[in-house]
Amino acid sequence: MPILRDRRHLYIISPWVVLISITALLSVLSSSLRAQECDDALEEALESLGQEDYDHIIVMIADCPDKLVEKTKKIVAYELLARSFFVNNKIELTKTHLNSLLELQPEYDPHPPQYSAEYIKLVADVKSERARRERSLLRSKWFWFGSVGATSVATFLILQGGGGPDLLPEAPDPPGIQ
Image (cartoon, rainbow, N blue to C red; front, side):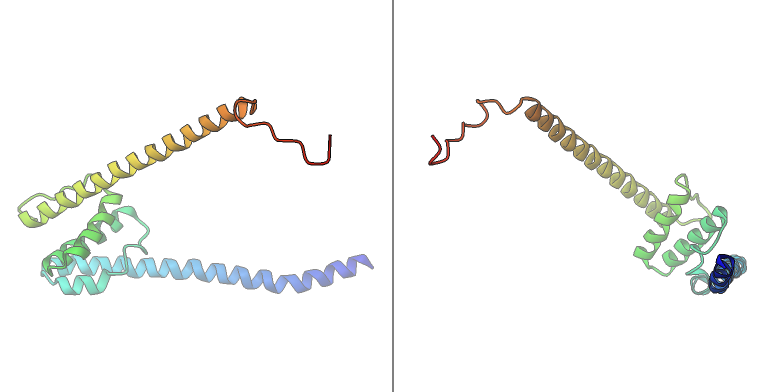
């Protein structure tokens, strides 16, 4: 009889296993479809770049960089968005996309005549700001490591000292016990 109980248990679990498997498969398929849609949108955005239709580029690929799979396509998408926002005079959005681009390709360095002098200067400013933030973060990490290390050493030395008579006064005897 224990075999029947095991089979009933499997019949109860198997629909859940099938449902989870189908959900995972659909999730993978939908993400690959979204990536393919973004690949197509990126190709169309590159064509729009030739026509200098920057508003169309923004509309087409604004959500795509995170959905793209290939690193090179992500880089192209971030660069297109940064340039498009720059042309539309949206400097903060330009900086945001330049930061994302520089995370993927730190050596990104636009050159004239394809890029304006203002855009090249903005890229240099974003790079220097990133370098400043990284130095500041490194300094703060070393500060915390040093603080934790010093505290650990001090605690160790105090505990190793054994708490002799020079550290704490001797407690008086409780009343009534003598």
